[in-house]
Length: 328
Image 1 (cartoon, rainbow, N blue to C red):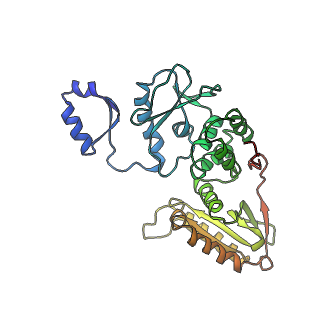
Image 2: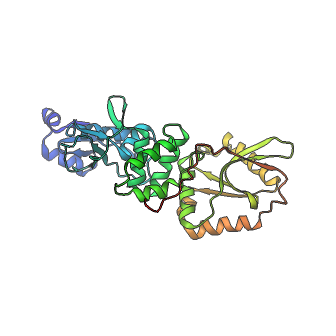
Image 3: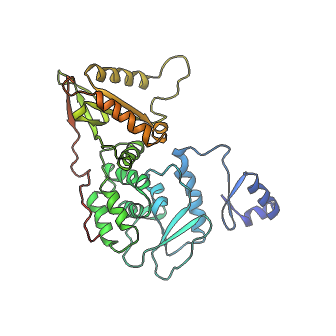
């Protein structure tokens, strides 16, 4: 990251900067601030680190009276970011006298009616995890906000009671009804962004949500493994596989995680379970394909044929059962 004045000191004028931006060699973070573009696309795991360059550039202008919030706060807290994230720096004005408008690459939120709970990540001021989750539940749809809330609750960064308390303080704020609807989907038992995303899609598409994180036990009382979800009455289990779960296959021999998963998968089938396996590409195929896949497997599942037992994961403190009140 560098400034226009620093470039000029090295003999790089405005015309050359404009040309470098046009060719994708550098990116313009905000007025007078630039960054060298990576030689290849930024990996999802590195997006938060890359975002810090934009954050520090934005803070050169919004240096006081503002705090990092919303998805920018998620990046600092280590909470999951959406697939189609724009990378815009999000700030909340905590000083009523600061009425700055959003600048290129920066979005300003205002919170004049209630105090903003703050934390510190390194040398940066940021909204607390509970406040960040509440802001995201109000601002974004469930596909974005529920995975964030799930991760915060699962990791113990924010409890459901703390998130609900934040939303109670935002009773008249825009987006609160959406937040309260999304809150009913939050479940900290889910262990990955993909799981949370899939369960939100199931809700949108009218697919009955499976019980999350179910242990499968064999007839001898030994655990076979824990599945991402289960339609227990139909003896059908769900596995959601990320692209990096099994490692790269180099053509010589399957990686160990793949072999271990195959053994577990076969053992569950031998117990009489039907299995649904979905990845992100499968979910992107849309409602009709996913609905048909789940329906077909559940239709042939039989609890009478299942020779093992299920053990549920304790939902205490991890599952939101709050009902949307009529006045909210």
